Length: 182
Image (tube, rainbow, N blue to C red; front, side, top):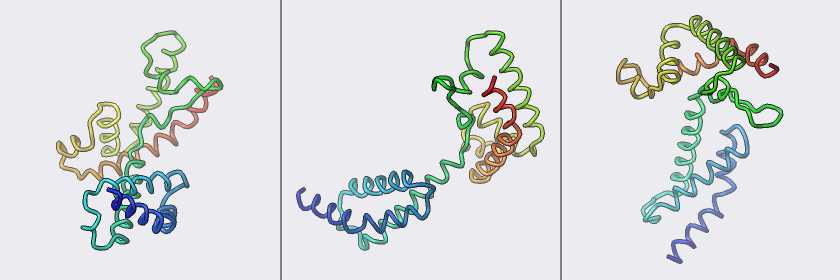
């Protein structure tokens, strides 16, 4: 066990700087790069037999590249939760107003305006983008379920949803600002 820990320490000390530079060049910020680096070290630490790795350099950089790719793909799966905000007090989220169970005239009015604008914006989308957005966000289906029922590749579905979310963000930006200042 002591030999294993010593070997892990040597690998981490020997590769940290280069691996971090590699990851940082492929991420948006330092925090993401640090998170990914930690994921690489965690994956390395979980290996039972470190000696089974023929080329530790290649293994580390491949794992890092895969982690960066995974992080990028996760970010593509935008959702309505990305539209959340906090008010001046830091305790009200946009989605809480829209999805709240309480019914005051004010929240009812806000919900009605939002849903009308959302569905109007959805109607502007191409059918394929509208369908994947509705099925994933509003009906709660996973991309795998949608893919299984339509035969469309998951990556294609993710791409279509990304374009839909981009359009909806642009289209609903004014409404979002109005609701923030409401």
